[in-house]
Amino acid sequence: MEKTQEIEADNGEVKVETKALNDGSLCGYDSLHSLLSANLKPELFQEVSRVLLGLNCGRANDNIALPESAYAVSSECDFDLKAFCFHADKELLRAPRIVRVGLIQNSIALPTTASFLDQKRAIYQKLKPIIEAAGALGVNILCLQEAWMMPFAFCTREKRWCEFAEPVDGESTQFLQDFALKYNMVIISPILERDVNHGETIWNTAVIIGNHGNIVGKHRKNHIPRVGDFNESTYYIEGNTGHPVFETDYGKIAVNICYGRHHPLNWLAFGLNGAEIVFNPSATVGELSEPMWPIEARNAAIANSYFVGSINRVGTETFPNPFTSGDGKPQHADFGHFYGSSHFSAPDASCTPSLSRNRDGLLITDMDLNLCRQLKDKWGFRMTARYELYAELLAHYLKPDFEPQVISDPLLHKKSLCIAGTSKS
Image (cartoon, rainbow, N blue to C red; front, side, top):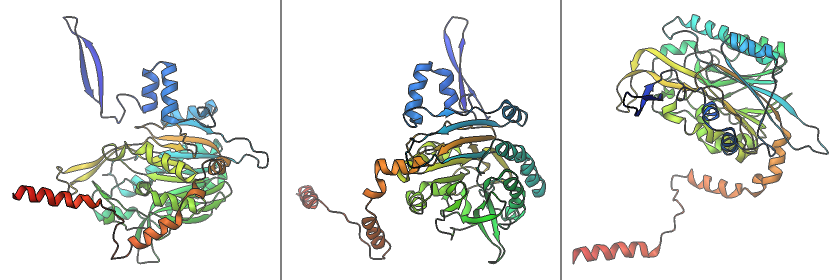
C-alpha cells in the first residue's frame, strides 16, 4: 500500500512524496469508509455513503449503541468492533423478526513455523475473548472465517498442512460448542474436515453448531478455485452436500463458502431452498479479488432477497518454503495480504460499512428478517423469473452435442466472401 504526503521544499514548491505502507491499510486508513470520512466534508461524505452503501428503509443504516465495557474489551484485546442495524417496514399481520448476527475476522496468532498444535491453540486463545464479546452482546448467530482454525496454507501444495484437518465433531467444534451452549448462540464453524468414515477424505466444510450446543449439520464447499496461488484442489475437491438451508431458532441460514460467491447459480440455489441469511466465509487477497468484494455479495442479496454476511481473514501469512503457481511469477512465500473488510448486505441493496482491512474484528448487525419477504413482494424476482427456460437451456448445455443458440446475420458471411473476392482480384 502507498501513502502520499505533501512536503514543502526550500524553494516553496510542494512536492508529493509517496511512502510505502506494509500494514495492509488503505493509504494509512483501516477501511475505505474511514478514508472517505476523514477526507470529505460531512455533507459530501453523507452523499457518497448514500451511493456506496445504499439506504435501508429510506435512511442510512443506524449504529447500535454498545456498552462502554464492550469497547474496553475490544481495545484491550485489539480487535475492531462495529455494530449496525437493518430495519424493515412495520407490518400489520407479522411481528418484527429481529435477529442479532455477528461476523469474526482474524489473523493467525503465531508464525507458520511454530508447531501445528501451538498454532491451533493460539488461535483458540485469540478468538476466545472475541467470541465471548459476541455472546455477551447478545449475538444470536455467529460466523467465523474460512478455515479459521489454521493458516490458509493451500497455496503451498505441501501435504503436511493436512494435519490440521479434523472430524466434524473434532477439537474445534468442541471448543465452540461450549460457547454456543453458554450464550444460546448458533455458530458457523468453517474447518478443514477429515471424513474418517470415507477413507480419511478431506473437505472444506462449514459445521453448523446449534444454540443448544448440538451439531445441526454441515455443508461442504461447492466450488474449488484453480486460480493464482489458490491451489486448493491439491487438498480437497468439490463438495457433495448440495445447497442445504439450516432451520434454526433464529431463522433459515446457509453457507456459501468462499469461491462459491463467484457463481450466481450457487447463490440462487440457497435462495430457492428458502435461505434468509447466507454467510460467505472467505480467504481472499487484495490483488486478486478486492474490486469484486463489495459487489458480488451485495448483488446476491438483491437478486435472492436475503441477507449476506461476508467474512474475510486478515494479515499476510508467510510460509517456510517458497512456492510458485505456474503463472510465470517468481517464487514467493505468501499469498499476499488478506484484506478483511467483512460486512453485511441486505436484500434492499443497502450494506454496512466494513470492518478493518488490517485488524481482527467483530461486526454485529441487527436485522429484521421480515425485510426478505417485503423485498420479494416489491420486486417479484421469483414471480418473474423464467426457471423453465433456464432449466431447458441447462439441460441442453449438459449434453455432448449442445450447440449455442446463436443467430448470425445472413449478410455477415456474404460480406466476408465479398472481401475475400476483392482481395483476390
